[in-house]
Length: 267
Image (spheres, helix red, strand yellow):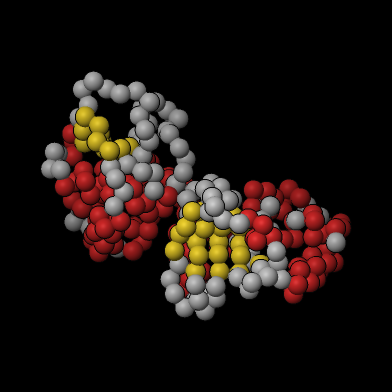
């Protein structure tokens, strides 16, 4: 058995798919994992996969052209899921599930329908992972709020469970093409930066000046105060329902929403 150990990212997993397929060792003799094995098998050969953007793009183009945009996006969402190691010992690794789903999809006459084969355990796992990451991305497209910094940059902070920043970066690049903006993923310490009139790119934020991100423009501070007063003013005390509110806007998203920030509401 050949076990390919790849990076836990979309590019890392797609590179693993490329290397595994190109090895011609037979799909039945190959396993992919996005986690360092805790216990090594004496009868397996472990192969480290170096993430290669060129290889990843070749896989991405093939999937997009052969399976269509919707299925391609769902596979990317599954790869972006950050649920960690499977809880059950025999549960399939995320990277391996994606690899086997791709193998099946490219063998089908209509590969775009691969995620309807839920009777296959690996397809079922990819479907569940994709739905989890996709739902979070969908929520954040509505809950994400931009604030204007002193330097004019539009800034938003999020705390997602999954590595969904590429999906948000692509969406807001289309919506705000003439704005300089940054979406900061505080969970994974990475940011999507979008220069005006260009495409976005991802960057590590461990060395970034976090103090700069708290220096808001004066106009932004005034608008936040006005908005929070409006938010409080339209509330009907007899109809306040925190339980329903938390269902519509889960608590884990509230920390990044201005009107739930106590500091602003007390001003």
